[in-house]
Length: 194
Image (cartoon, rainbow, N blue to C red):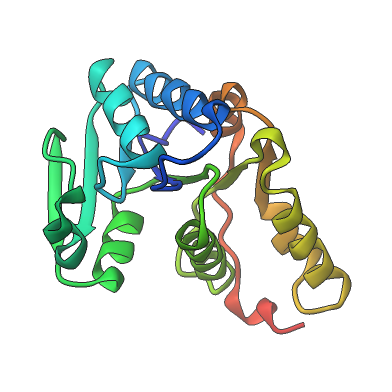
């Protein structure tokens, strides 16, 4: 999909994680920069978030951070970005991240990353966007989440087409190809109710 110029990365803010996850975040930041893709993310300088941003910047990439004031005030805002937007609420942050992105990447993360995944997936299901969603299942991290979504489909609470929209790759090295082959899929929100 040649029109993907800006990628929103959802990932963890914890530094207390496996080094493989940190290395993957660095590889992703470098890759996005080298491909000339803008990185959009939550604006923090900690955890995988900070690693993605730092590596993208170090490799000449453009990085847009969007962070709520109550988090920025705790001194976790990244001040070395191409753009840093300090907003009033989490809702404003999420909407602005969607508005600035052509696709979404889900790296390992915590409850906030799961919240972002489900929200962006639901927004697609409701026809609020037509952008690709790529889950990077590093070391099988997201396998329980993927199984949960599969069970939701099996039990009739979502459709197979919903599951099919979620692109799953096992490594950040697979992300460029996944982005290149991803399609914009518009859904008729009326089909959500099966």
